[in-house]
Length: 327
Image: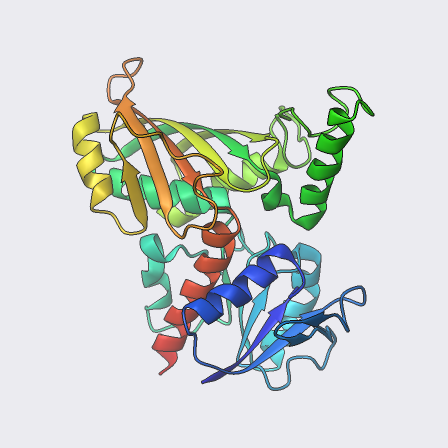
């Protein structure tokens, strides 16, 4: 049994982590909810959110950080110094070479090498969906390159973006704003800040995250990230080239046998959609087909719940491995 802290307990992902811990019956002796001055004192179904501070981790065995990179940068060292092991779902440590970046279906072995890791980073939802899908294909036929477009609903931006989408949609429906003024009924082909060369910070980080998870630092990977007017879920379009020929029907068989995936290969079935995968704990793959523009080309579509599977579940599965390894 462990004393578990959730930092950012009032956030969308923090709340989802608590739900997943309960659903999977994680062995918790005491659950400690922590938040900023803004959320501290808030009453929840699981108790009162306490104030995050320098003494908050004195009795904590395991801490989930779901409060953003700035908070993680300040308080993760505090938690570690107090003796807690940390799982961070923000972007703060994802590219830190000293911190393992883990998707349990792909590289759980990083946590089973005898070395105790005080901090483990959980990747972005896009990197999780991509790596879970690409890893078995890479094992079967190798990967030369991949061109990826992501279609991310508002939930991956947190409660604030969900509220913005709701306000923008209502304003448009009531003729109180013009199309193009917000996210409602529109797609915005930029997530993160723009960098020299026209790539966004989010796209650059996603490339590096995916390479780290797949242990493929030279993988040619190009990403365009698009914010779409959906409340929950995320879609990922992938065109990839394998080193050896992998026909679509064989790729279907490979993906069917891979952990964490649900393959939708019935042509009479609707492909997985953003709304359709909301609340599910798998990565859904459909529209698997040969890409005839490439010699060894495949094309496919991925859909994932960016909050449930793409954040909370991955973090809790990491915690389960850490707990098992410590026993």
